[in-house]
Length: 80
Image (cartoon, helix red, strand yellow):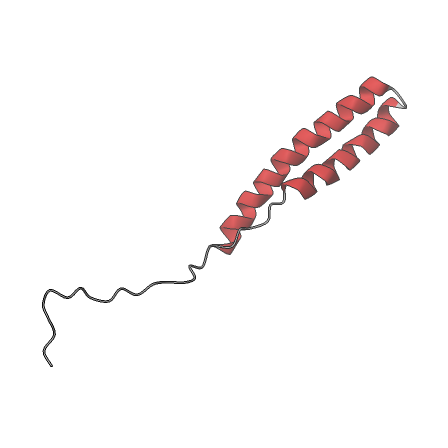
């Protein structure tokens, strides 16, 4: 039986669209590691001085953040 030319073609529906898997970041791990390390260094260098410990914590967080970002960049280049 001939098909009508006015009839629309059947459209195929995709039920599942695979999404790109999100990669885990190294930033939180680097922040925690560098903060603990910087706190330890500040504890031995400044003793129990509150100002020295706060400076050590803040510098540990900043260094950890940038270190983690650089690790993410390095790992993404290695996998591609």
